[in-house]
Length: 290
Ligand SMILES: NC(=O)c1ccc[n+]([C@@H]2O[C@H](COP(=O)([O-])OP(=O)(O)OC[C@H]3O[C@@H](n4cnc5c(N)ncnc54)[C@H](OP(=O)(O)O)[C@@H]3O)[C@@H](O)[C@H]2O)c1
Figure (tube, rainbow, N blue to C red):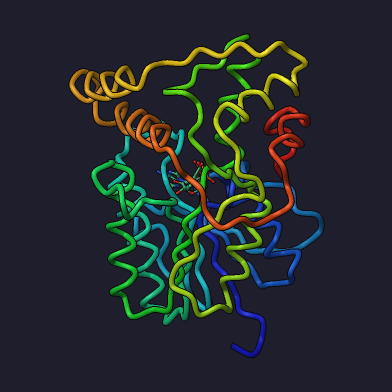
């Protein structure tokens, strides 16, 4: 690609998407976004980009969204949305709807944000849906890159909120390791994938931390004495079983994802970025979104 590619971003109203939109316009890409609620778009100073109002779950509303687009980046997926839809409806099917548009308009490349170790955890509902889309994308004939990020700083806010309430609950001995990543650092990685011929990028933030260390950082940012309760791992497994039996699949999905990944001893990925969790917690855990 000689001239700067034009990019369609889907998911621009989300945590990662908002940093991606900012990064793309700052790097002077020609950018279009498809959103269902333009009021949720982040503030991007004086830089024009095109907004298409549409629902990625309803193909008729996104017709021709990929016209004149070279690269699609999708961060669309259910995290905390409560629309009554399943991961298969959104993480899989909505992304397929965008992929169909991309194929029709001869888009050159599709960049999709899945999750670290999602391919190893296909028995977890969210991963099953995401990896089914990964399969579809890899067979589409388009160039593609799958981004496999570690947990986002936005998800670490849960530790901060627990610390604010006075006590952090951890499963096992709290020695499980991860390197969570800030949206701004991850946005850089996604944008750099535009002109890289690489099928998969695994990435995490610059610091590997144990869950104990994350809890201590949260208490320290709040100037509170650390109080941590360790919940034996068999209780985590029992909650998983009970939740599967007694909750609807829509309630179970996020519980299953959280409890499965919190039980992994090693959730580390190649390090990238500058932002530290200490700085994020010191800034109030979430206040610095664009
Ligand atoms: N959070 C993590 O720690 C983490 C870690 C690894 C990978 N990921 C994956 O990375 C991606 C981005 O995560 P994020 O934290 O930025 O998520 P987010 O803040 O929830 O953003 C998700 C985006 O998807 C859109 N979306 C969700 N349901 C939709 C629906 N039914 N119809 C239309 N649009 C819909 C949202 O639109 P609205 O704003 O209109 O709801 C939003 O733009 C997700 O696929 C997530 O699974 C997340």
